[in-house]
Every structure is written in structure tokens, then in C-alpha cells.
Length: 364
Image (cartoon, rainbow, N blue to C red; front, side):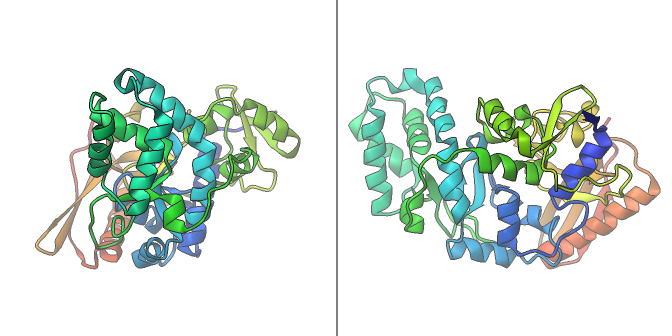
């Protein structure tokens, strides 16, 4: 079994993630290739595509949400993702069992609550018209007044495939979170629970080479080992520096480990940083946990393909400042390349020239 160095693994993953070079690709195709975009906040999906696509226009992705060709829905790891409509109808059923298991932690707060009846009542409510979570919770409390209100909300979110309706998530607009079912919003029925085989292959195409544990971490699923075994005859296998078996598609690109990797700015919760059990292919061990605090993540940037620091952007009276905080001292060439990339990001995503791009003292 061939050994893959960490750098070789890094370059392969960046290539699959469209981060070695910006690709000329429709936004919808990129969202599908990446198996969705982390969308805990409204702006990150747009920045994720900006770092990956040449000539990306945020209005293109916003338009997909408006025409309902893309939706915002809870899927992998119980987090909100922006998916194509087709993927929302297949990936949510695939991870539904994990959403059901999530409710076990709240069983003490849901004593006496008939979860099937709860789902039935919540579905009728949100399919009548989109509702806020507060409205859903208040209606369910009239039926189960002794239940924990937050647990009722979580139960509705877990049992039903709820999408955030527009204008929430549109570029340059704002709106509160209002929810309806994916079936009502798309006027299409979701698939029955699909076999995971096709999704495993798509995951490898977007995040590979990867181990069984990597995919389980990405999807929030368990017992995928048997699926990989079933697919083994059509896959290649490698071994990482720790002896872990990695699977990959034979036809997938695996660039030379010395392939240059340009600097890239990533928004908070970018899937590149979350989609593997072993994240050292992108995050050096000494920087683990440095790009977030608790449940809060910061924008991150890559130098030579690896996490190298965090960034933040401030807007005031039409002007934008960008602060770059590296985790270690950077060379002159890397600093210049980051400044150029940062100025481009501000100009293309904010429509104004950056008033200032500054480096904070490196965070040791």
C-alpha cells in the first residue's frame, strides 16, 4: 500500500476543493461538487465560492436561492448547509437517522411528548405558511406545556427537513429565519433513504483521499466501514503517515506534493477545515483549535496550503479594513501575496477598495 505524505494529501485535498487554482465553473455545479457549503451564517457560502471560482458573482448564488435551485437546510453534523435542491432531497434523508439519534440527549426534556404527533403538528404549521422557530415552539407548547421549550424546537428541527426560506441568505439582503418543509418549498418529494454508496464516491471526489473515519466525521454518520468495503474493488488505497488506510477514486487527481498552493482566505466554518477526522492535512498540529473559540469560528487563511492564521473584516461608513493575524512570523513574499489576495477579496466582494490591510502581531 503506497504511502501518502501529509503534503501530498494536502495538495490532493486542495485540488478537490478547487483551492489550488480558481476554476471556471457555474456556482450551482460548484455547490454540487462540494456536496454543499457550510451556511451557519449567511455570508460564508459566498466567500467559500469566491475563493474557489474565477469571476464569481455573489448574485449568481443568491439567484439560485431565489429560484429555489438551492436551499439552506440542516444536514451533515446537524449544521446548516447550502445545498442544491437535488442534494437537499437526497442528503437529508441519508443523515436522518443521525438527526433522530440527536434527540436521545433531550429525552428527559421530552417526557410525555409523542414525537410522531409533534412532527405531524409542526409540519401542518410550517406548511400552512413559513414560521419562525419561536412560533413553532409556542404552538407546540400549547400541546405539551410541561416540556422544555428548547427541546421542542430541537425535536421539530430534527424530525422535519426544514429549510430557511428567502430572503434569508440572499446576498445584500437580510431576513429573519422562517422555516417550511423542503417538500413544500421545492414542491417535490424527498427520496427514500438512499444507499450511501454514491455519496461515499462523491465525498472522495470532493475531499479525498480519505479514511472511513474521515467521512463519518464529515457526515455525522456511523458504520460506514461496510460501505467502503463494498466499494473497495473500485477504489485505490493509500496509507497516511500514521498508518491509517485512505481510500480514493482511481481517476482522481493527486498533484505532486511540491505543487505551489497560493494563499487563500476562507470564511468561518469552511468545510475544508471540518470534513476530516484527522485534519492535519490542512491544520498543523500546533495550530489545532486556534481558528476558533468555543462554538465560534473565525475566518482563516492558508499559506502554502496550510492553516496559517485568522482574518477579520470591518466596515465603517463605506470603507473596509482587513486585519490579518498570522499564527507565526511570515516571510516578505507570503505577506505580499496575502495583501494582494486580501485586497482582491475586499474589492470584489465589497465593491470598494480596501482602506487598509494590516497585519496583527503574530499570535504565539
